[in-house]
Length: 263
Image 1: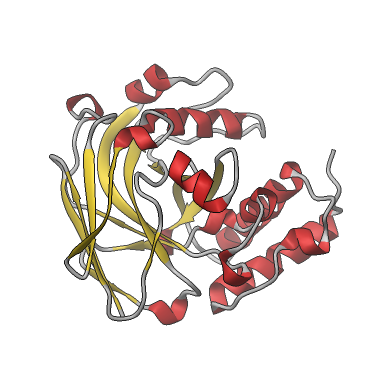
Image 2: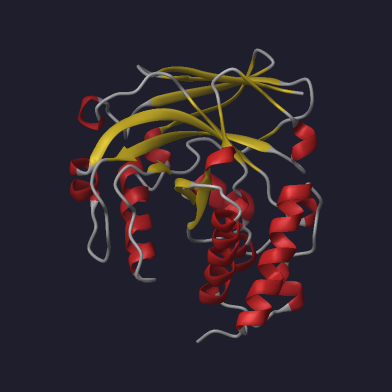
C-alpha cells in the first residue's frame, strides 16, 4: 500500500535527482514523509530513472547495495537494496574522478556480473545466475548518498537510487565458472596504504546470490534483469572515504587491478 501520490513521487524524484546532478546535500525523504514504504521508495527511484531516459541517458545495468554484513552494520540496516546504473556513471580504469561533481564519495571493491540472458524472479537462484552470466569483471563503485552527513534509513536510500553515482571497471574479465567467487581475495589501497581487505563471500555468502536477490526483488515489481546488463553485486569491502588528491588501487586475486585518482 503506497503512501505517496503520483505528484509526491514526481516531486521527490526531482528533489533527489537535482541534488545528484548538482552535487548538493538534502535532508532524507522520510523526514518529510515518515509514512513512506519500500514501494513508494522504488516508485521514486523508477521516476528518477524515467527522467534520465527522457533526457537521453541509457540504463546499462543495476547495483545491489548493502549486501555485506560489514556494510549493513556500517549503515545500521538489515537487508539489501538496489539501484540502476546510468551510462554516464561509468568511468575508465585509471580515470581522474572529479570530486566537485560528487558530495561525499566513498569507494568499495566489488565483483560485477555481465548477463547474456534475462533473469527474472521469483525463484531465481545461484545456478540460474551462473548459467546466465557472460563474464565477471572487477569493479570499484563510488557511492555518494545525497543525504546530509551520509545518514539515512533504508527507505530513503532506496528512493535515492541506493547512493549510485560512479563506477570503474577493470580490464580483465573471466568466465564465472573459472573463478572461485566465494573465496576471491581483494585488497584496497589508498595512497599506497592498505585500507581494506575482503573476500567474495562477504557479499551474501557468494556474489551470485546478490544477482539472484536482485532478480527476485525486481520480479516483485514485474521487472527483470535484461540480457547484456552489468550488475554490481555490492561491496566486498566496507566503504572508504576519499578526498581530492587520493589515489585508489584495488587488487583482485586472479583478475588484475582497478585504479583511479580523485581530483
